[in-house]
Image (cartoon, rainbow, N blue to C red; front, side):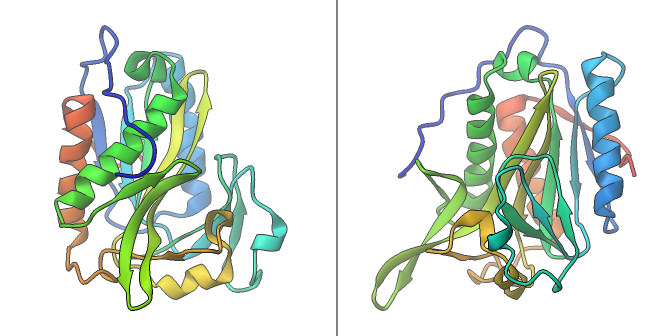
Length: 237
């Protein structure tokens, strides 16, 4: 695999506590999700709430991270645009895409190593994609997960999953998005993650037919392989 080497996650004492796992069945308004995450992260940092992994979909929209350039918003009137505090640049969220917000105590989980945490998210995605017969890879100069594509004129690649996080008081929030079967044409309204040399793909685009429930199950197994047990809970919104 080309890209970063993923170090095994070394759990700190007490990190074996199960992480709460919530799935929203209906699309969640983006601003609502941000407010919920802000509150939850503060509560986790204060020791008043458990860690949470929250899976959901958003209505179609663009989000801009802290490194986003206005020039990369190619069609400003196409979809709502949300400027947010996560790392990274522009990306698209919408139906058919699984968004995973990861609220974890990084001192407990990685000893405060943020780079290791990003590697954990990449590893989870690569492990999950392998269950669908897809070869996910990382790149040294690009965050996220990429898929090599065989084309008549040689080998190319496309992005299948994006990662953008923020950390406050050593608690992570935001997380990752995996393209299951979204409308990929919406990515044409932005320069995804500031990279215009390569395209964007999805499970469906790669001829993999998988339901959101199947994807969720595979992601959960991949997270548990790195974090330990998860426990079901009601979605926070």
